[in-house]
Length: 161
Image 1 (tube, rainbow, N blue to C red):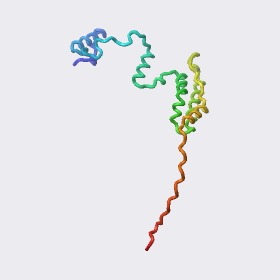
Image 2: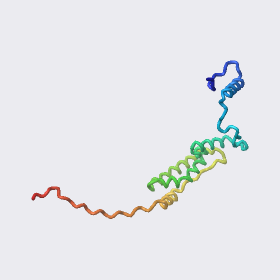
Image 3: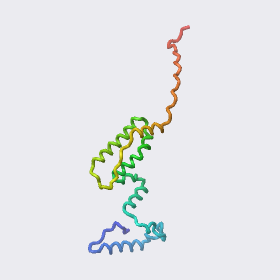
Image 4: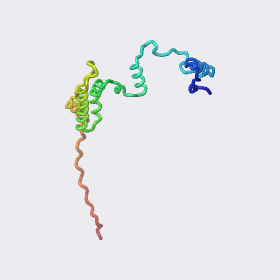
């Protein structure tokens, strides 16, 4: 069975070799009953950039599109997501550590040379506002349970009768 893995014979032009491969595939019937046969191609009327294609591909494959953003915009998006990330944390100390880690990365970004004069410049997160919001969203602590009754001590020796 001949296929795409056949090597191009020496001395034959690439175009001729490709045309020959296509003709052989048509003779074998490889192009009959393909899904979508006879239907127009989608999105031919719109001009798609390489960025549009990469974004659509990332979304189809479930990749986080935030990783494709420039660093400044990525940090801005991360700041917008801080309250949602903080809601999954258990203690106030963890929430503060999350915000302080973000702020440290923003300050490190500020020290880098600007990519361009139009590059996004992220701002710091308000640690206290994040903690206050986290505290508001927390369910109230359960009421303290009453002290259990002291266990009755059993005598460890059996009484002799």
